[in-house]
Image (cartoon, rainbow, N blue to C red):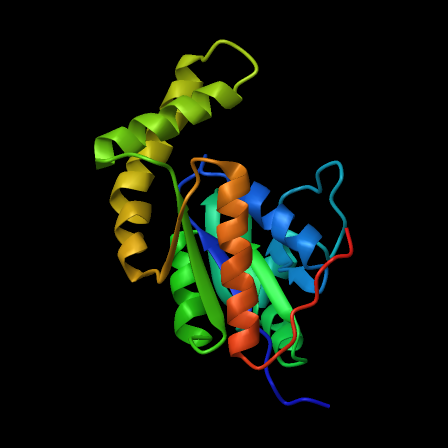
Amino acid sequence: MSNIRGLFFVFVGPGGTGKNTLMKIIMERHPEIKQLATATTRAMRPGEKQGRERIFVSADRFRQMIANDELLEYQEVTPGKFYGIPKESVESVLGKGEHLIADIEVRGAEVVLKTYKEDTVVIYVTVPGETEDEQLETLKQRMLHRLTHEPTDADRAVINQRLERAKNLEFPFSKKCEHIIINDDLNAAAEQVDAIVKKSIEKRGMKVKESEK
């Protein structure tokens, strides 16, 4: 049995850049890479499975996890709605020489990178644009395009919050990332990410296992 630890592929970037789509493509190509199951107190959504995308717990259980130092990082996104990264979800997989993948916000990514520096590969995903303003405009248009209805004042407020977050938090974080993917063309971006994944696994002295599809 090998003592080589697995790798943790962390996707970071503003909302609307296609991180989740790229992540799903990589998981289809590399079925041995497992999605990180994060803990949350929100209700399970259609298509989700306990222990796969999320570990669904009560607010009391989540607070117990905080008190027991079971979480690498956590946030109370809205009053009573918690999200966090269980240490066991990471360590149990990496310790067996298996790989993880996740879309994590900046603060969580910083904690993962600090805790698992030698095991973490951060892939920053962004949109095209010569300037920051051009990138922000592209993000804005993508978010508006996702709406299935005419944007309301509430929709615009949420989009503006996400754009402010991109400008003040996510864009600056890109300077800490070795791998930056500009998602202008999904197929091209997927090939770039796939190359990073393969190279990282091979560099660790492990074989790349790919889907037969």
